[in-house]
Image (cartoon, rainbow, N blue to C red):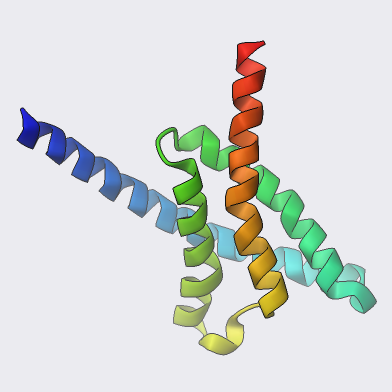
Length: 128
């Protein structure tokens, strides 16, 4: 019985890691698009505009993460952010493709925090 449960846990972890990796690639594409949109919209305030766009997007991403991952949403958010903002750009282009450090830090920190907040809000709404 224990071996059966272990297999299920291993399968669950593998399934989550694969899904999170795909989501991380999609996350990378979306964040890059948002940064380009911020550059076009507010060229004199790119960092602030990009951060605001990305915070809004992270709320949406947090909603999707909590919708599809009932077990480890905050871990998923950390994994997705790292894959999308660190691994994918470095693998595709190199370290020069990374976002500026302040923007990168803000996005990476806000995704798990907003995912946690969305999960709490959803819990409160379902109790009422």
